[in-house]
Length: 89
Image (cartoon, rainbow, N blue to C red; front, side, top):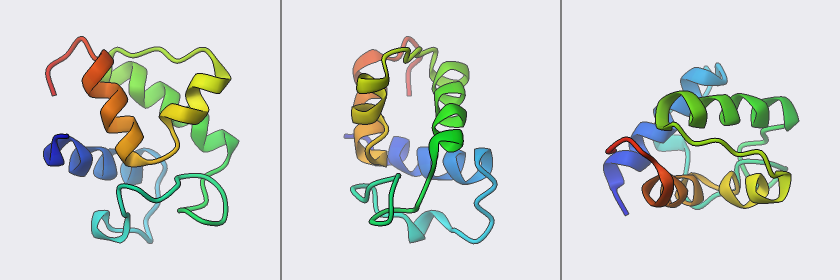
């Protein structure tokens, strides 16, 4: 797993979702992104992440069940990007 990609995703998520009170170092790559156990993202944030994946990595996620798995954590996002992106990371 590319640590560089994980760090890039942390920055992209903070910028995309305007999480001004968070620094990349505040986010553990394995923590859940949604719910009370993680950084507390909601369904609107999920839509923003879908747009991010499409725009930055040319990945489209249409199936909600697939999205739940992909967006579980930064680690799962990075794994999915490495396996499915048309752009080199």
